[in-house]
Length: 392
Image (cartoon, rainbow, N blue to C red):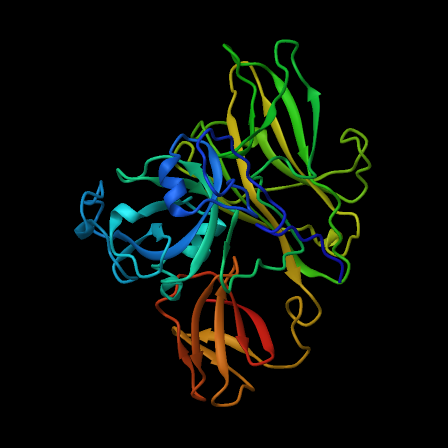
């Protein structure tokens, strides 16, 4: 089936400007070493490579600064999911030879790299792009989101993916009501993704659309749209922040036919990102020309801020998921146990989360696999040549 697949790291490049004489240039192809990153903590953005050697203790946030080797877990047990330490050699156990990598909340990087969920990453080489600035009192690489590489990680093969980590991608912005005093409503923010706001010393009445490129759902069923978003005003007028779908959009939102749909998830806290998943309307499920749009509306008395990132369209091919053999194997979870109908005893089984991070590898014993330690959600289960999406 046709896909528009954007890889999270392969085509993205971070650049930085530096006056120091360093061997690396800080690009994806020529990243800094850890030692070089330590020398250049100037809040610039750059790529850094190193080996994962440990993490921050999961101690109810008692550890606020790294001041000795005792403040670091030199392993994968009892660590937080928010950060890892990397060094130029995999056997380092000296914090002065490390930088702390901050894995942004809800990001692909956190899901794929953190040691709490991925203990097998200890000792692996990783390459990350982030802001070179102090973290936990020592040299750091902060706000690593979707620009990273790590041994054994493959970006999920989504039907469509746009992280909004380096711009608006192929999305289009159309202002249908832009006051004279404003130059834009939607804009890109390197930390928060695409952001809409119509406040400039005062609240303005405005309307602006952020429209996706065409998404081809030919051969796809049960298509869904998932995105992370945050708002400023809670409860605010979330009814002015809406989501719409169209199959006849041709460059002008005012002439297209749009179907609105409810956004099910809103945070109860200001600027807290939550993940929302909606079904593509039933009559558009097989469209070869699907567009979706985030519509921002404000008034002089109700002017919110809306932030959106990590937009995913995914669905099932005729076999269940893209690349899955067509068979009648039944995978399901019953009372915390993964049941694998039709799978032979001794088959290797791998379980991946929705972002493609491997969560478990085991051998099927012919009865079932305990998965009650995994968080509820959608997972991809691979057993031999079979692969299925399974709700845990």
